Structure formats: structure tokens, C-alpha cells
Length: 149
Image (cartoon, rainbow, N blue to C red; front, side, top):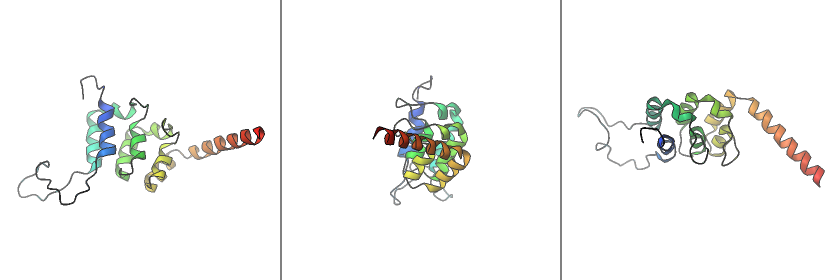
């Protein structure tokens, strides 16, 4: 990350999308700071995300080259936990009402499409009018398509 913060969205987005521990036999002693008498405790993805947000609070409002916000990446990542999605959401709640420019979906829809129903429900509870706005869009499309036919 440079001083101007130009690459900062990439850092958080990589934390959101790429962080997953799949090999339970992986030795973590080489990358985890701990005292010799402490047990091995894996840092959670939400801790990493929390630290990035703490160090660069404006990062959650910054779009990347695809015009996506970190909440879009978090909600769209099938490996992102509920906690990770909520950390990003808490840092910039308005992002829940912004459609993903890649898919046209709201973050609650992205989360649901990846099976993160708890995050989807929580995002929707924060902005329930998104359901009615989605219905109105669908009705308008339906009316246009039936009048064209």
C-alpha cells in the first residue's frame, strides 16, 4: 500500500476474498505471534478485516477499478463469514443500499446467492425498503415487456 492509499481497496478486498484456511494440518507457528506456553490460536478473518478497517477507516467507502465497494466483495465471497460481512457493513452502512456494479445486485442479494443467509437477513433488516424498490423495478420491467409484446 502506498502513502496516498491508492492500493488500499485492494488490500481489504484481498482480505475479504482470499483469506481462508483450508488445511487444518498447517503449522501456524511460523506466522502466528505467541508465547511458548500459549496454545495455537488462528487469527480469524474478521480480525484481519477489523485491523485493516481500523488502520484505514476510509477504505470501506473506496471503490476499486471495477467500482465495487468492499461490502460487495464481502457479500459476494462464498468464503466470507457472517462476521466478516458484518464488520465491513458496520464500518459503512450506506454500502448496503448500493448495487454491485458487476452484478446489479444489492449486498443482501449477493450474500444470499452465496448461501450466507444470516448476513443477507441482517443486511436486509438494516434497509428493508430495498425489497419494495426491487419489486417496483421488476414490475416496471414486466409492464414494459408485456406492452412491447
